[in-house]
Length: 397
Image (cartoon, rainbow, N blue to C red; front, top):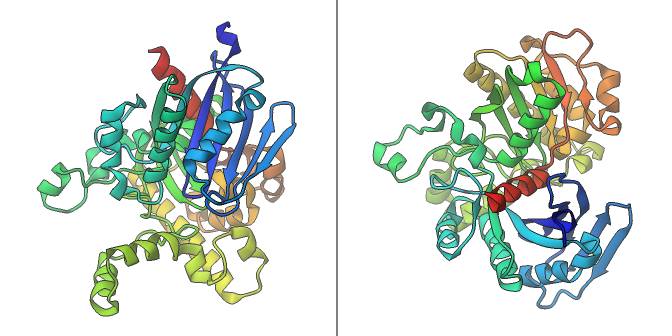
């Protein structure tokens, strides 16, 4: 079988779902299939779209169906998803690489143990990322497993941008600002170089706005500062995460409300953000359709925190040449983009209303007025293709 008949499988495992994609393995990185298995543990359902537009679906009973069974089901569907191509590797999104892992790495037992030690730093993500690696390694031991890290892109940040004001011994123990969504930011950085090389060489803030949300300040395509820090709960408010919070609030919750570490973890990761403020939903679409005043308040707080952090990152950059929106909300919600830019007029940012409204249909493009000194873009992200590229680099090294 020639290299042109090979493929790379990409897995992005969450607590109740596994997103997946299959790419040509010979360097073109064309997607052969994309989809997910959702409802793991409740009502498992696979749905995949093939390159020719065909849809593959399957459902299973929930009993005993966990990540291991989900990956087994994916591999069983392999010939239909890959068009008969031979898989040559599996690339995985791993949220936290700590201080030891900057570049993607082929996983063995020793590396898996190191990554498992980082689970307390990303408790909603890391255990499921690693469970997928274990399952794929067991079911397909002949395939290289490659871990690609959401923290890696930010390791280029200046030391001051990574530091906390704690005694030095804690920094030496790895307590620092790591930043996340790095696979997305890396993709946007590369894509912006193709679309607008002059802007990419300047001072840009990228707004990755989805159920998880963050901002990244880039200078010449490199990460200078980001809103997420030691964990993926810091920074902006998100779908269910609170974002930045006075640490004294957490001490108060312990002392006055009797909450222990696990209860606080549930609160700040799963019960807060848009869901907690609105009391209704973590989904921006639901909130925008709701007449409830608390839904509007949740949206306003989301936008306010974005605008305030854009100001902070502009200071870190020493100015601003452009802003890029990406991810689910950033790509698909013109209202959020308009509200954010309305709060950033003092930075010279503005929108063309027609371009902004058309951006989801257009897929990508400039949404600022022609001739605007500071450009505003919408660029869809693609973390999966970054994982495929990284995986190919590792196995071909």
